[in-house]
Length: 261
Image 1: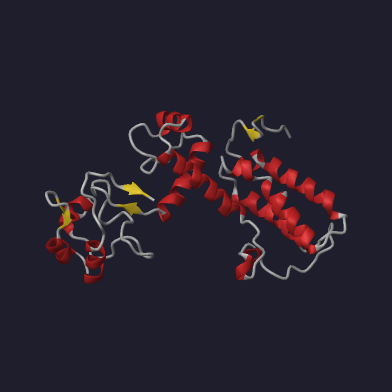
Image 2: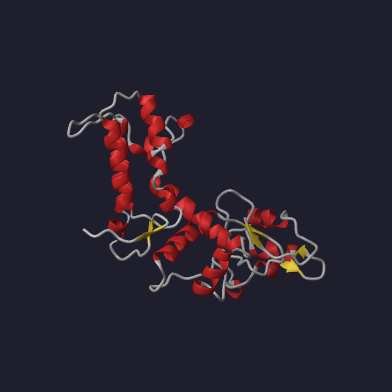
């Protein structure tokens, strides 16, 4: 089978058959494990090789592209077999599930990396760069091509987008689940849709939605002249618990913009 052309050790073109395009990662992992299989390695030795070598192999690719889940699972299957000392077709008992092994050692696991989850983390980091590093060449190129009239947070998935762009949007969606809004002037934040309440969970408003304020921004709740919360309005809209949370949020005296953190 003809291998896809590569640039900077990554496929220059990713088509519909994405798994085949990234199979070179699995083959590289397989070659490394085959070279170690016949050696008498202790459990500690296997752990060091898995963490320092095997799990480092996909890192460059996972920082640029969303890898197919099937490929991630196949790589993890090879790692599991190596960890439990399986050689060739001779089966070994797997005493713990992979989900347990990926937990921290403080939680009874081994601290191995969940490849798919780490992939999402690295792509979220790229999306964060597009949100914060507005002077970089990376931002200027992607801004002009994919989201010229909005920020990365409002950008839409398109059928004509490259796999690299769609991968970054996957990371953006991870950010949207975990980011919180810091209130400036309240003009960018929707009262009902965005995560802005200062509590761990849930960070969005749960009070019943008011029909006349469905699309209202948080700035609606702030008195323009005094830059203070409109206590009467807040008490009339939100549940007592959420009203107290909102009124306790400090407001800036200047016209600072809302920001994600």
